[in-house]
Image 1 (spheres, rainbow, N blue to C red):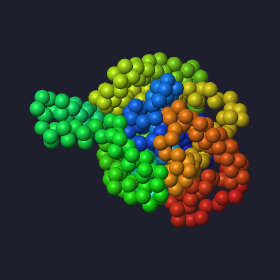
Image 2: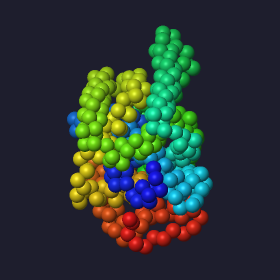
Image 3: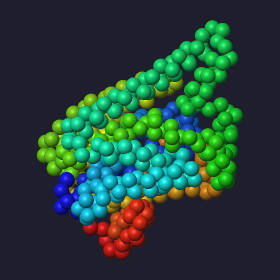
Image 4: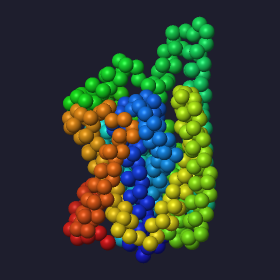
Length: 415
């Protein structure tokens, strides 16, 4: 990237980021509205009729893991732009980057502990710090490191899967000891439908007041930001490095030919959609067996998600090249992605938690689209309206101001 290129916005990045921040909402809304187990196991809660199965199946193929991967990809690309712009303005790229990451970590931890335990910013910040050490690498090594890290993630999950299998077998063996049975009950806790007692506790907690929810979050998920870094750091870093490679190669800037984007989209979807459809069908056919849930939705999907992420990026770049009113609004949503992400948590927790409307556990999986669609519309409307008048989204402005230790200009439309 050159200083001149870095000085202006890259439309494809904004559009893709808008798709990603909107696309991640249907995956997150399940975690907002239902017990945590439902995020992985559709029969754990909110699975009542055919519409719920269809909603889960389509999300499994096109959304789950793919939008998060796309978001991570764009985070890596944006990181390079920040470094380049800092250098072009005479500031220290290293200082600019690490200041941004430290403040992002603070935002993420506040978001995680005081609003919603599904936060991803507290993972992005430390992984982004690690990603800095790769930012000068050429395209080919970045892609190589990305593939290597995805394989590392796969092997880590496979090792956990082996323990999952062993715990299940030990508990099912004739004359299994109480310890073996207790171990299996603990291991499967994040996947199995909660017991009636556990379910009643969770529903009562999230329908109660803010302080009760806060205490529950600290007791149940207090160490999650740390464990997430070790368990999902390799995959997240892989996507960030792939995003750097995508920016340097021109793939994410729209510089490739139409035929090249068509080939990437067609080949990626021709591989990724059938594989995801097969994995989803096997899960449904097994009655969402817990062992298969771990093996297919976590382990196997780790190697299939990147194919869909890259294909989706190519497809979006391809179909939005001619612009239009919707594309402009998607780009605005992308320019305000930080605000839209945190704003989604504010709106969703107000809807579902007891300190708001207390609707936690009252929607089925398919009915959650009645929440997602209006929130999408809100993102498309407010983002464009705001950025036609101001340079940054509210949280973007705050992050930038804190990272630079200087109040940033707000008035005036973004470039």
